Length: 253
Image 1 (cartoon, rainbow, N blue to C red):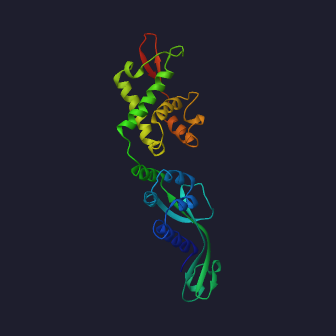
Image 2: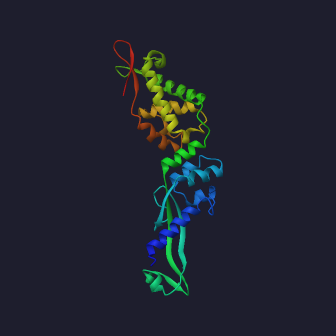
Image 3: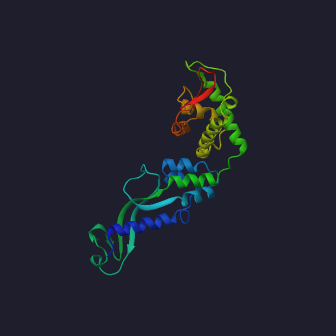
């Protein structure tokens, strides 16, 4: 016997399988049916075929959902009702016949919408794979802005600004570690930074933001993206250059 749960799950599975096939994924589809985080990620792609492939490859489980526009990373599609053609009596075919509206050999069951979960880690990977790759020039530009901010904020043991060229005065292994961290941020946020007009600005603001200075990604120049980049930069902790009593430069975190 067919239960209402089975009927709704079957419908959810069929709708999930239709995304990218019978249901074309284009900008209108993404805007209408994808949650905000999914829309933001897919908006980084200019080609609708790339957009469709990235979304379809990141879809997870489908299930009935009683609320439109939920908070989860998802595609949520309206249904309205399910139609089932059956044979025999409703009591023999359906486990809960009272839940169905019967019209001859057709039965109808209310079903507000279907939610298809989206794996955001997978979606990020799918989107980045379709973006222009990070070049050595991109990394150099980002690091030039980063080191400019490092030197600008360098201070002595009293917190007073100093003239510094940290890249040349710090131990080589410290420089390498700092550049590895900065480059990791660039790579992790490439999905948002790939279209940046000047990556040196991003490098500069990465240092200011992670050290919670009075400017950075959060101060308005980055628009809505600023909050996302600020949160990401804060996960790296602080890293400031100081000149100690012996005159040598070092970093403190």
